[in-house]
Length: 348
Image: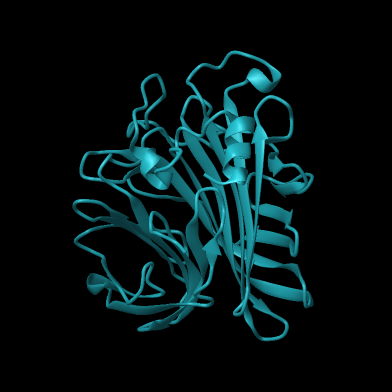
């Protein structure tokens, strides 16, 4: 265990939802005392834009597929994770049993810049409010502008040792509920999360990189998800795709890896109508490599056959829990851009 990992554990105590050595496999560990997702629960906004502290794990996750004024492809990621050390809600200051972890990244065709932040709940260093919406850790923030309504407009800011970005996002479509009204099953054992997205952001802003500033435009996708045991004990990670297709449709498709792969997804029309997808609807075929840098994504019932290639194969998130996350190009029966996340693989 390296020095940074020791420091994290000393400051935060532990991150039980992730597991100290198993990484994403820890999401299948026991959840006694925590709340569980309920298929009968209706999501209510803006309330559900905020934190759900009776659940063990939660995230606010934005990925932006960008094109620079120089004509090149870029990507940006902003993520805030909340994890509960215990189901108790007592305490003040450092004794509040909520911990926060945040990741930010900028990807170019030649480089991948990563930063990570940590905070303890109860001291004001990190948090989320639902009305008006704001998510922050230190000087990183994703928030609605003054007078903003819900998640319709956001400003997104973060910086690391060798990069920074300032983006503005405006939604051009509705929120999307995945699965059964936002109740999203992740495996044959019935493990699930509450899961919704805003996939319709139009984005503009600036990336600050070692080689200089770049003005960018593009599309962004915000994922909101919370649960207490979203994986089965036999499941070790997932492959998640989010595409902005040039015909105006959006596609989320995912494979949770385990003894039997479990597939799910959503095909979203430009007006926000959703077709819920399962393993009979989706075929995901990896290319060579671990993790694979190319994929074929097919929806035979929709006549979709997509070839997916990483903008930068070296988009490894060299964070305390490592994973691969980066922008992709989409070709085939329809073109587009998007993001790919791959967790639970051995990374160099």
